[in-house]
Image 1: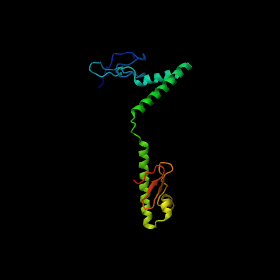
Image 2: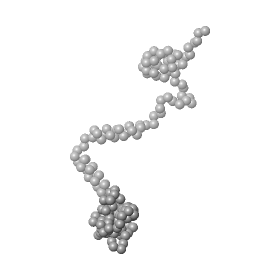
Image 3: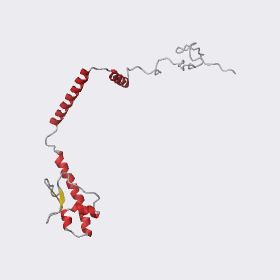
Image 4: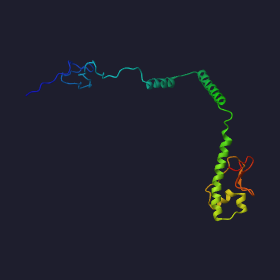
Length: 183
């Protein structure tokens, strides 16, 4: 029994490459054009709909325009000066919007100092379980604790000139021009 070839289209020549095509071929053998494309009633079209240009195409166009732009020195100077003025205006607006009472520097320094005091106090308690209290420990507790291996590094107060000491009759304190005292 001989099978008859099904006819898929009525083209004799490919509309794209003008090559001869047989009616039982769904695609052109040379350019792969879809010859047996169904009618457009109710079916999704094969070619994507044209919704304009993609955003990346316009972006590449802008980049090409900037790369190929040959401006005079006047345009460059005006552009840079407008950019500097805009930056200054932005800084002034942000400065006026930021609250004056939000002074975070001293508060952060005080918290860092208190954290250092807690670390030193913990190492000091561990040291005093094994050793006696000495005058060297009172004058420079951090140096003694680092030397004996109870602290790995030397904690410093964020304010320059302050130091950690144990005054007579008191506990560990931060002493200096702006000492933080006890946590």
